[in-house]
Image (cartoon, rainbow, N blue to C red):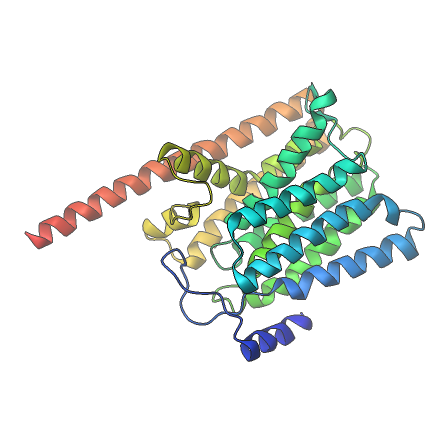
Length: 336
C-alpha cells in the first residue's frame, strides 16, 4: 500500500501508461506497472521468512521463485516495450522448465498417477496458468480478486492440513494483492500489467507442486484448477475460438468473458460483483470437497464444479451472440 503511490508517481513522470486500443475497456492514461508494488515485496518477504524463520526451507522454494521472477521480468519488459507474443511464450516455457530441472513436478491428479507424464503435464500446467491469469486481467480488480480468493483458499486448506509454510507464502502473496487492490478497485488508478498477472498465474500454479500435506495429494491440484476455472476456461475458449477461425492464438480479440458481459450491458463494477460471487461459491465448494469429503467423493464434487463453470461460459457465449444479433437487427432497422 505504501509503494503503489510511488509507482503511480514514477509511471506518470515517465509516461508509462496502458495504451488505449480497440480491445481495452478503459479510457484515459492509467499506469500499468502495479506489479512493482507487490511482486518484489512478496519475494523479499518470502525469502526472509523461509531463510530466517523456517531455517533451511529456502533452497526448496528457490526454483519456483526463479521461474516466477523470469516470468515477472519478461512481463515487465512487455509492459514497457510491448514484446512480440512469441517472446513472452518462450519466456514462460523457460520459466516452466526451471522447476522441472530441479525435479519438481506433479505426480498425481485425483485418481490419475501421472508417472513419466508428470513433467510434461507440469510444464503445460504452468504455461496455462501464466496465460490464464494474464488474459483474464481485462477489468478493474478482476485478476487481483480472483488471485486473492485462490490464494486465501489454498492457504487455509494447507494450513489446516498441517503445511503452514506453503500456507504462509500464499497468505503473503495475498496480502500483497490486497495492498494493490486498494488502488486497482473500480475506477482503477493503476493496473498490474502483464508482469503482475503472469507472475500471479505462475505462482498459483507452482505452489501445489512441491509437496502435498497428508490427505491432500489426491485433490490439491484439482482444487486449484477449480478455483482457477474462470481464467482457465476463458483461455480454453480463446484457443478454441481462434483455432476454429484459423487465426493464431497470439492474435488478440475482444471476446473474452468480461468483453461478453460488457456487451450484455454489465458495467465494470457489476462484472466484478458477478464474477466474485461465482468465485466465492467455488471457494466454498472447494473447501467442502477437500476438507470434508476428500478422496474420490471430493474429486467428483470438484469435477462437477468445473463442469458447472463450463456451462456458465456456454450460456454467456450464446447469450452474447443473441444480444449481438438483436443489436445488429436494430441497427439495420434504424438505417432503413
